[in-house]
Length: 116
Image 1: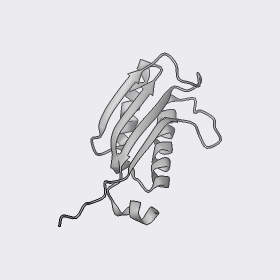
Image 2: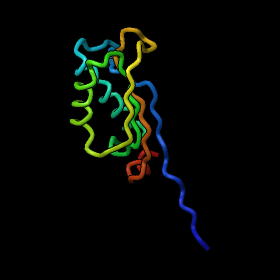
Image 3: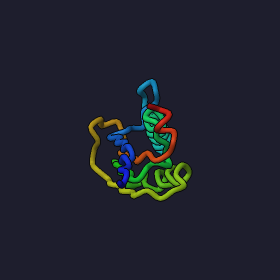
Image 4: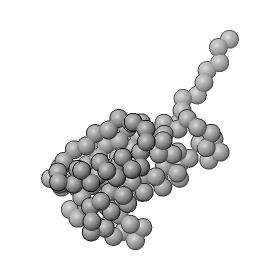
């Protein structure tokens, strides 16, 4: 009889902004992008996932001039190659925000089992 393996848990994070823990936004876009990435990492950690579990990233910007700074932050943090989409939009739900990140991760490592 074949054993059925369970599918790996999936984590979906939507609309993660670059707000600091005190809910303020950094003035500098690169700092805002780094804070958004830190927020994604923390949210993943809380679910037992890691950044390396990320299989898809969708990134929303309000200014095309910020793309280079965002790509640099992403390259500094992510060493694997998840699917990546970047869109420039006129405004996010909070007009003061300049970016939001959505992430899908598939947790395949033992930390997920330890988290339960």
